[in-house]
Amino acid sequence: MKKPVILSTDPGIDDAVAIAILLFSEQIDVRLIAAAAGNVGVDKTLTNVLKLAKFLGKKVPVVRGCERAIIKAPIDAASVHGQSGMDGYDFPEPDESLLLQGQTAPAAIHEVVQNSAEKVTLVGIAPLTDFALYLRLYPEDVERIEELVLMGGCIGRGNYGVFSEFNIAGDPEAARIVFESGLKIRVAPLELGFQAKIKPEVSEQIKHLNRVGEMFYSLFKRYRGGSFNTGLKIYDALAAGILLQPDLFEFADTHVEIVTQEGSTYGASLVDLNNKLSKQSNALVGTAVNVDGFVKWFVNSIEKTC
Image (cartoon, rainbow, N blue to C red; front, side, top):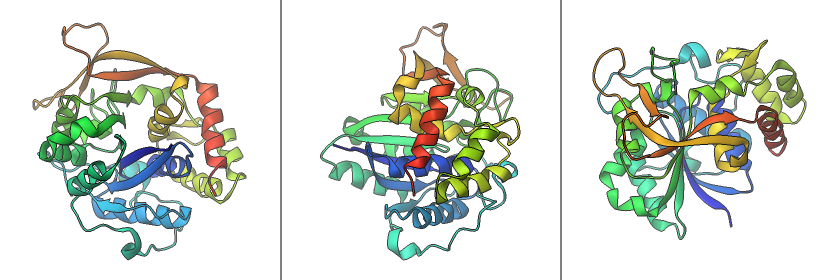
């Protein structure tokens, strides 16, 4: 039986890879995609989700997420992904009426969870605003959620602030709500992306697999998450990997605390590997990945698309 999944995403080039892998996986059933504000604004991420769904030939329900973070001003990563969020490929225009749902993201998530016969897995590869609001509005749903798998946070230095990773920095208050929710959480932190880079020869390989591989090759040429020539950091695919191929990863069972006080550490994720805080663990944080195994899985997953 396929695992029911709800995906929150802000495509974003590395998001696009994760979306394709998840939609074509034989292990899971993606029942809803919530387009989140993050790499670019929510109007653009929503358009990108709908474009990807049409390109991939997948009729999955889509909902527009919250326009901005709960408290802080919006940030974006257009310098990394391009002004559209997916610069580098000319996608066909989508027909929004076929997939787009009219509810708010929290209401749509709640509906899917309540109507599922099995517990639902949440996957977050964007700022966690929509999941945090959902958990505040429908706390009774926690018992119906299997786990949350997310890409976010960092064990050491950040890629947005000195100590903050982009997805957590996009809405630290939301991340704090999520990590304090009591959900079972598995995390792909920034460091896994540093380990499992997609080298030029791998990009060249996927270019010749199929039309999806050719599309990703075009996006990768414009992506600024690392370097096309020395290795790309395809962060969000690591969350898909943790969900679908967990044996490729090593984890630390630890406490993660999100800093929400203003200052130079705002948005930092304190991953307490040595139990300095003496607090109960609330997450399994990925600390290492089998790089060769991950790259092989990555290529095979794209080969299974269209």
